[in-house]
Image (tube, rainbow, N blue to C red):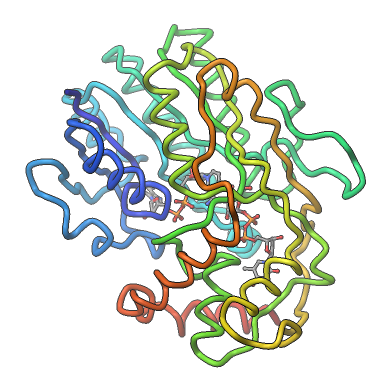
Length: 332
Ligand code: NAD
Ligand code: DAU
């Protein structure tokens, strides 16, 4: 049994990770979360207090981070400013949390010799053309496009440098687009689901040809657990489930699953610098660590996600109006 420090555990993927740990392992969990607009304490409220403790604070707070790392066996670092559109409006918290916060954590795990896993994104590799047969691998050069993805790329490079220069015991994973329960409704899939629930037409950026490589959040987290168990220190693992789909197709599927006409959506302003396509080749993770996705069928995973948002309106309703106001101001 180990003591895990999970940063960003009140956000989307972190919450699902903490719930998986409590359900399927004996680990005890301390969540360090700044409770920004993206954190929600209700997501963890039903977990037993002897298995999960929530500490409210920032990963950039060196004194706090030092004291929490000192009492942990493993650190899994999810905390980040995570939304591309927000990074285009104001990059400053992305610099502070994603770069400075990672630096602070690395200094603490270096001091205590603590095992560290760094959660990152496929966006560090930039984007691919629609007709390019290539997919991202662990050897693809970094080429991030947005303030968000550039800070994630920078944080990955800090981890690599701390491994090489100081022998920090770290692994990195870069995952594709996650979907599932507890995702903030600013993101593409839950924004459209909650729009349809509200009788509002879904909003597609530009022509909607952009492709994302969808993976269920549980499959992402099972891969992270597998890397913690058997991943080689200093290595990077790409996580993806062969889930490439165009945005237009995803919106049409949401409308169909929610019994609406499939063309009942609006085209809105495109995102500046909008990445066209992400695609992950996860051969290394599959062959070396034996991981396979368990949610093979996107349509049934999406249907279950729609059911979750229908059943958990109390969880998202309080932030719907403010989220949509931000989009409306940008013509989106
Ligand atoms: P999220 O925005 O839902 O959650 C982020 C969490 O971090 C929130 O609870 C927030 O309060 C917390 N946080 C923000 N700043 C903090 C700070 N300074 N100190 C402590 N906590 C802070 O994000 P998510 O979608 O769950 O993403 C989690 C991680 O996974 C991020 O590192 C992201 O880059 C990465 N990732 C996300 C996806 C995806 O599809 N969502 C895919 C690949 C990788
Ligand atoms: O690839 C992994 C990344 O996936 C993570 O690193 C990020 O943290 C996560 O937010 C996600 O980034 P994206 O920018 O791909 O996700 P988002 O949900 O914002 O948008 C998905 C696609 O849908 C993208 O092409 C933009 C488009 N979109 C988004 C919104 C919110 C729309 O067409 N309409 C919308 O209303």
